[in-house]
Every structure is written in structure tokens, then in C-alpha cells.
Image 1 (tube, helix red, strand yellow):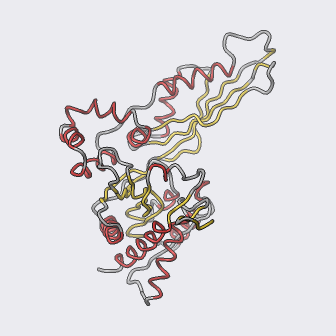
Image 2 (image 1 turned 90 degrees about the horizontal axis):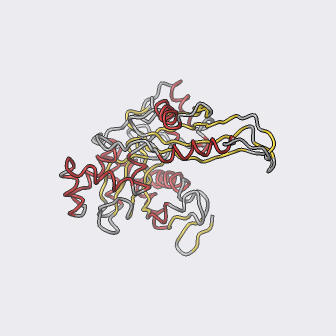
Length: 350
């Protein structure tokens, strides 16, 4: 990377080398002060999280299983300290979004097979046409929002005292304004992803030559699954919506939504305490991680797992992740070091 104009620029500066080095520099600072923990602290750094963690987190988890090691709590990459990320809050209000759960996922193949032939004598609908009609039905019929008893609803209720009057009024009279709230949520890509299972068509294949009818067309749907849905229920929803025997619906690479960790535990409160020691005036709330981490390999090893990134991010910062001009401010990185310093220190006071 490059350090310039008060920023560290480079791939991974936000996701997720900043946390790795923040942890390492935090523990180095403690060791320089002759710190000796009362509790055992493990650092688990995988190298292949982006492709499932098969040779990183999964093998580390196997070691923990073999050694029968269990943890009070774990913290991994996750949600940031959001600046202008939560609707209803005053401008520039900062909220530490501590993810207590993450959505599941599934990848679903839609496949249409056809005899093919010459393009000069086409049928009413080619394999690509049939597939396109199926895709439109899926996009026109999203899965329903799940607002009751959801992690994101808990977050909004937690933050309600700091929200605008209209939001407070709506949330305190939710029985009356539920339909209006659902309309509001549906109009926001970010909010609706936190309240329902998403379905995104990400890959499409079909045809090899302009004058040859395709014998096969395929699309891939990437679905992030909210609690209350399952990979099987998503696939069945797609079958019911498409309602066309010519379209095969095949599920692969699935994961159930994660267990929901406590937002009143010692681990959660230690994270909150450490945040407030570094970031002045920041509110803290449980949240839902809508993407996936490799914490799935650790579910059986920790009572609670939290997904949190101690960096202040605006919507424009979030857009840089996996994108162009990824960067983190030097000040942000320094606070990441401080957060991990205090978290380790606080976890070793009884």
C-alpha cells in the first residue's frame, strides 16, 4: 500500500488488513508494557476467508476441536462504526454496529435445456428466453420482509432515543405504522437487505454462436438468507414463483444463518466499553451482518461470536471495499490499534 494525504491506500486497507495489523500492534503495545494476560488469548488469522476459509479458519477450528478448546467469546471482522449509515439518526451520528449474527447463504443454479437448432427457424421461446422469463419472475417476487423479532429491529429500538421525532413516533406506534415502515424499508437497498432474504442474479450463460439456437442456458442466484428462512425454503420459493418445469432449480454451497449471540453478555459489554474508551460520543448497538465471514467454522467453539470492525466508515467509504481507491485514514487505523489494546486489556480484568 501507499501512505499519502493522511490515508493508507491499497487492497485490504479496509477489508481486512487494518484489523489484522490493528490487533498485532495492539498486543505489541501491551507486551512492551510487560502485560501478562490472566486469560488465554488466541489470535486466529486465516489466509483464505474470501473463498470459504477451508485451509485457514477451518483447520484452525479443527485444532481447537482436537484440543477441546472453548471460548467465552470471539470477535472477527464485521460491521463498522457507521457514520450516516443508519436511517433516522442525526447527520454525522456515529454508531458502533456490533454484529451478533450473520445471514446464511445459498447459491442456486437455474438451468434450461433445449434441443437447439438453426436460428432461422426458432421456437416461440429459446432456452435463453425461457430463462429470462424465469429471472424476471424471481426479481418481481422477492421474499417477504421479516421485521418482527429481527436483529435489525432490535438495533432500531436501541437507537430510537437518538432518532428524529418521526422515527421515534413510528417505532413507538409500530402496530399502526408497520405497513408504512415496510414500504420505507423496501425502497432502500441497504435496509431491505437487513430485513429479508436477498436474491441476486449474478452469473448468466447461454449460446455459443449468433446463428445457433442455444441447447443450454444457465443463471446463478446468490442468496443471503435471513433468520427464519433456510436454503431449502429459498429454493422452494423460486420453484413456486417460476412455476415452469422447463427450468431446473438446483441448490449448492449453502449455509444456514448463524446462531444469534447475546447482546447483554460480558463479551458484548467488553466490546462496548472498549469502543467508548477510544471513540467519544459513539452509540453502540447489536446489528446483523448481511455478508458472510469465516466465523461459521467457529460456531461450536465459542459461546458468543461478534463481528465488528473498529473503523469509522461513511457510505462512500463502504463503497470502496473490494472496489476502487480502497483506503483507511491513518487516524482510523490508529484507533483500531487502540481499540484492540483496550479490548485485550479489559478482557483480563475481573
